[in-house]
Image (cartoon, rainbow, N blue to C red; front, side, top):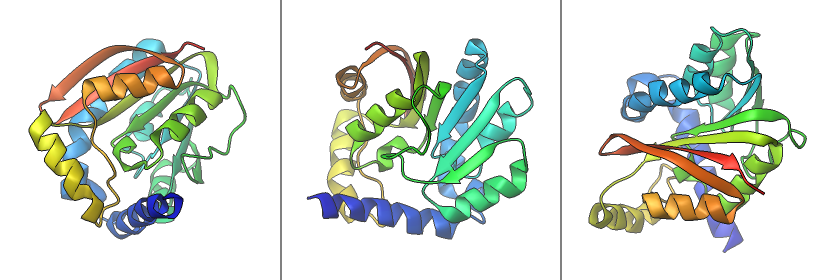
Length: 208
């Protein structure tokens, strides 16, 4: 089972390496574009001093946040080529690393905010990722997740079909599934919203 789950990560890496040059103009980039302002707005209301973007992709959210020079910005992505694109765009405005969300290469309590936009549905071990996010968050820290969703019947069909996907997509979540995962991993959820019928944003505070 462990090795089969790793296949999803390898597919994700290959997919995003291949998309890195034109991600923002492609279907995936346009699909998640609606989430950017919603996530950024939540971050700015918190006004953190440090932030980690897990699955930062081409760096769009980090670029927008870099206009606020009071925030120390960090990003991580599984795709080396995505990080190359982000680095070329951000220069020294953020510290970026290639890495796995299941093993975040930062110390405990490193960030006031962790964001994860349009990446969570790729994670074959979501609980492990959430526990890592909680580990690197400060005790009063906030996690913000934006991701795709769908009505129950459509979501069930999509989740069944994803096992044959070449994109590395693992699972799409309902509101209850997402909240249950977060609570199980030591978060207190709040402020679920749907920018449109295909996406959601949720915030969560470290609770234990």
